[in-house]
Image (cartoon, rainbow over all chains, first blue to last red; front, side, top):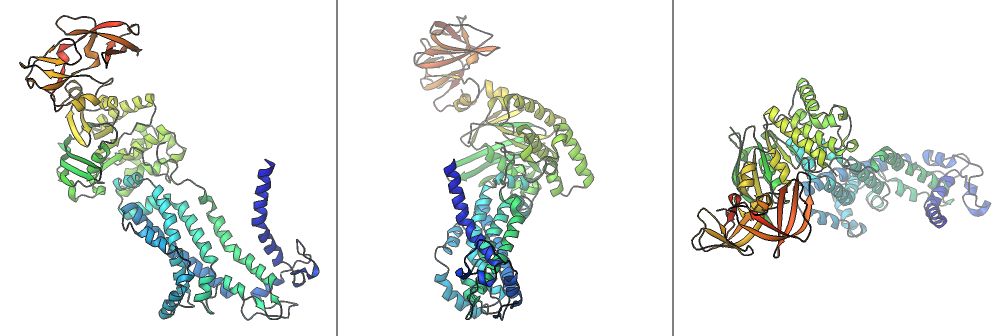
Length: 278
Length: 353
């Protein structure tokens, strides 16, 4: 027993320690960032300086200043991640339903999977060429589109397994009751897979939210996202701005956490419990 | 009036062919479909519903060809084998779902709901989700949903198979009552022979995707049209003796019976065939004018109002059903006789003679 808890605690420590580091660092003033003053577990002089700095570009007592604040990248991240998630979830849901229920395009699942069989970097050069040809570089829709495309396979496969769990008889029952196919889908099937849909949306959102590579290559200035912005928080005078990066990390963690809490009650439910006789 | 008419319907699957199926169900009839598991019974229901389209033949509903009719406009309701309740709706929402979909008025919905919850005794579970209901309660909600629609026919696919024996018997009586009171057309599918026989006005016996016989339960039981039907109808099953008909066509010589059995009718003279005798048509002891022979009792099952005796005749097991409680020692020799009025004869191809 003791051994079991030991490993659980060990796993927790490995996972949670970086988070602790990030949160405490976010509230540490500049002198406490590095070992010069001796590393401490918690900030000795807690401050909001780091947050002030990334939101306003300057802060009391700091000689450096930023030419751009977090606000632009935060909005860019929110817009592109949400739009990308919508694209992936809507297309993934509809296409996987068509494949599962109507047996359409039986080769689609594998073709879609192929999109994920190689690292995105492998196709980024052609994508960049295409995007610049389309005028999509450094636009919100260009980045949203690539997010939707890259996460579509994931949404497709996840929703496919959820749809496969819905017994066809439940849909037949709705058809017999007088529903058209489309009505069956949104009155019966969609509500039944709602937990799956929520889970899928959350995962896809997190993938988009944490993307660095695509945003780095497909944005220049107007639509730079949080991860890319974070990498720029380095100054010639101050070196790595650990405190600001940590503060940024804390802010970046908030949307997925809120999203997760919002859909939490859907996450651990059986889909069709009680619909069929055991 | 004919409610459902299927003519030479064929549906081909990669490893199974259903049909050709021909059958008619009259308005207000309780029509049973019986067959061993996975012989295509559910597919017949799906043809009627329009969830499957026949590759050949046609389905006609109250005089209208089903080919151009969508599932929704057929006006047929169904209780699925696994019930298929909508898990995200309460009992009430499940029941009124078909009414809402067909655009019924609030008043009509309320009336039907009242009617259904009264006849099915479900008022107390209308607010529950299926997950919170017992098996019997879900059953009733599923029936209620089919009933609420007030459709021209109701199809029931093994609707009570999952219930325990006592509840099943109750539901059986209840279903028959509901059907009679509302003068509805029921098509009832089951692999439980007793259930179908007890409840149906007429029965179709489905074997290997084909209808082997249609008739009243009594006809199917007392005059099975083929060897295949004789084998699946009746519990314990019919005793079968291989043998041949003599040259004059007056006697059947079974391989393991010591003496020939006198028969009537026009059997194929000198050809092989099968003699079938129901367990209740074998009597203990001698009887005048009936063929008799000696068997060895191997086990006795007293079942209250009757007793099943398993006996060996050579290598073959005989099932004998005798009224009342009978005590026989295992291993003892017993003289039995066949009731020659109730012999079933089948020719080489298994057709009844």
